[in-house]
Image 1 (cartoon, rainbow, N blue to C red):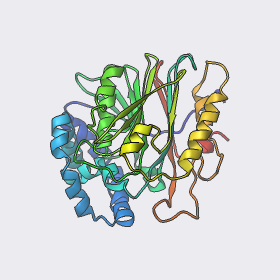
Image 2: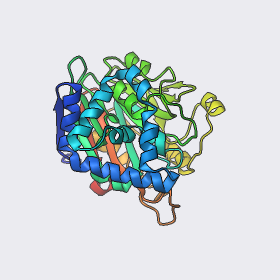
Image 3: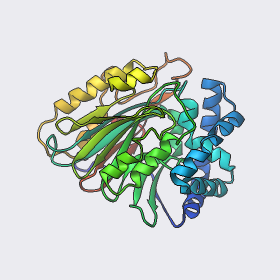
Image 4: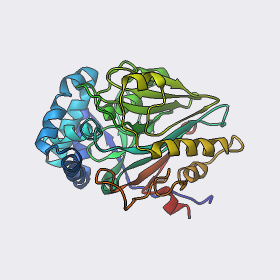
Length: 351
């Protein structure tokens, strides 16, 4: 197993002004951007009865909040649109896709962070479970911006923020939540981007801890400074859950009692099963010296298959859940600034 190397795509390195970064993103990944647009136009229609025209109009309601939060994000999205030969509103809708789709289409993910005293280094990892159609839209971005750390992001083409880490050792994972709560604030994928542009752990928290986010989500933030925290965010209330003994983990339901009092959610039952199972995996770890392969093995857990941590498509799913599977797995060693990811299900590369 020492020769294990996750299968990934070529890293797309972007630099320059916000518009230049966006234009290169859109131009280099043009085919994948169009794949994302096709996926979400179909998904919005099938799961929510929302036309692409309506999705674009709803996305536009977020513009004032985004401009106040970080106006460069608007400029970067304009660049992507120009580079890919599509409209700005199309790219905006992709970046607000969680706010448009998650009322009816539940995301799935299992994330965890390990740091001292549990482990000698700080680790951050997750499976991202979503529509299998988006596997071909995945890209690995390296973004170099003046005045910010260098970012490493695994995302869907056209979306400017998602899961990853930066050159000063701050990383973030995402767990979506299915609720009817929404306000025209900052889309959660832009909150993820802002976390990754932070220089310190406290700055990263400040980007999302004041009810800035437009819809509920869970952000798992960790740092090479041996810190990790669960942030359950929403436009009306935000809760911070500190790590216990260097451990924190999350799936796709609210864990904070205070959040459950103010946010009504619809939980897919396997979220509870996955939470229990990842806790078992973490507690069973022996020794503090881990390798990335150890964490990918944890993410390959098949208990309660096919609705497992390593998620596989199920024939008996309803239309909303049909096609859900692990789209990528990611392991970040924040202490040593290393990111590894696997396109598709991790079990396929560990047999």
